[in-house]
Length: 175
Image (cartoon, rainbow, N blue to C red):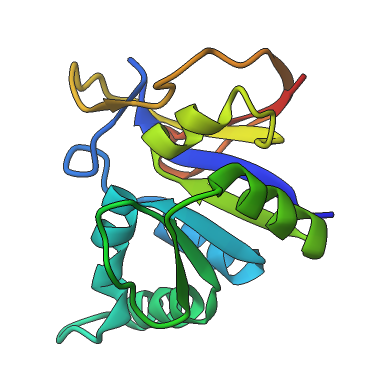
């Protein structure tokens, strides 16, 4: 059975803001992390932002190309009622979200990430998320999307680690 993990970069005050929290200095970490994943489940907004990686862009470094290759090979399920189509290696899910995710967990091994704070927040009550990984950056943004958008899940600290650029990763198991 696969483990469902919600992980994102966030500010010390609990917000996700991709303009103030770019993936650097953790880009190498995210390349390697993406290479190990079984699949990703996206909310619409996160998926639309990540579609950037579907096409080559002039001036990319070798590391950016490596991430794009890993992202493109990764099976994706996109949860959206408004999208009518999704890109390569992606499946659109409009209904029965919890049943689809439970089936994916049962049919796969390894780790599946859920990407998007609103989607993750909607899954808390179902108990489908097994682990939360908070990548805390040493900045206070004062705005953005909160990491926790719905009910606060009961959590148990599993580990912590200082990463590049004074970023700290906290890993919590859902209890």
